[in-house]
Image (cartoon, rainbow, N blue to C red; front, side, top):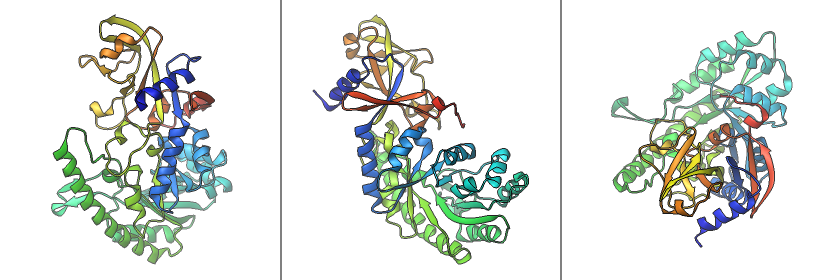
Length: 400
């Protein structure tokens, strides 16, 4: 029996009393992945990206482990909810225009002490001030550095279009704006190198593309390390008591941790290890989060149909954004249909061994987005469901 077949047997035994559709997290795999992130961070704390987890119980589990410290959130409303729930170090990774939430933040000392907001433009400061509604609490602020690699005088750009702040001078100027503005305190710098941390460099069947990605990433790492160090020096000249410099992501943990200027690493997808994180030379994780769909039809030889399953991930549309049939091994989508909203035909010889009501296990393309489809996660240890915990959705929250 292969390792994957053994996993399927465990998951089927553990959930035999449960009807699909359902979602699970294999805690043995989850904990092993967490340990690997800490190992690669080499002594620097790992801040957990909540959008890649979207389950308070699992956020609490990972933050209880040595080597993890703080949350990186994705909306201001989520940040306030987490802070009210007892998480006391929440860094909002994206700028917000949520005026009502800013009014709450500015009026509550507990929230203001726990949450740090992201800015990359003086207009963000103006919006926060206009939203205060009389609240006088000091707002903790982080600046975001644009990590993109610019070539040929800026005519070629590699990397996500995030912050407009690219040079040390630009960040230092905004740091001065924050420092001289009452009601704000600059506490950190954040930089997410998605073109390094979020792009696999070992694409199956594409050796030339993989080599090109590795060459690009090596160049991008060198350029960013030098520029990030210069940015930190420039900002510390304005704000010497900066609390943190956050960088990285699951795919770049060990490289970013090696930079002296970086004080903490961000990671989240490496806990669940969705399919987009299979193609890396720098690490190998264990798939921890899966979902199951029930077989509801047997249309013919070598074909079964499961209920639903059309859960595409965000990003540029393409086959890599689709969930993948994982267990039993050997099933594939019908190229004429793909995964459907209500039903999904699957082709392959394993179909002939599946009966009505059997489960087919899938892996999502990205991590936390799976939790927007399910209100609970069944936590498996060995071949037993040891707990069932709500996702954000299960607690009545869909923050985006």
